[in-house]
Image (tube, rainbow, N blue to C red; front, side):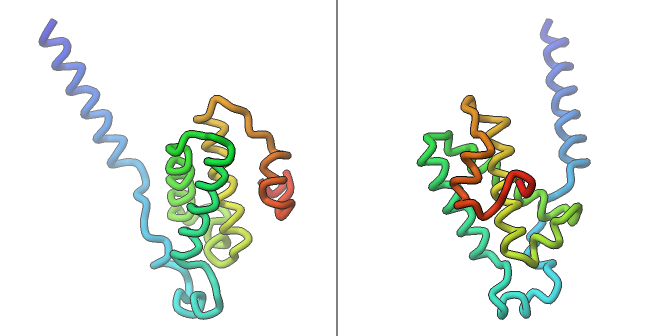
Length: 137
């Protein structure tokens, strides 16, 4: 019995290490933004934009009485997406609208997966003051 438990634990640790080694790492995507200094001078995307999105998503989370952990899960999705360099993530690092949309979509995804409540798309659009539509999100 003890030997089986030990083998099971070692198998789980091995699986976790393999997953950790094969999962793409999250990088500081602000360091790799094209023309980073020029972007900041033009009022582009920087760390303050991410902070603003965390603040906004936290306010929405509190207003809807959602679990605070959902905010951090959403930001994990968001950071990993922007770090990936895939899809429209490079565009999101050049456009505030696309940056906000990526954060909102990450939050919506986290709520759908981890919250017991249903956040419908119309409510999310209303929260965003009709800045985005269903097609965007």
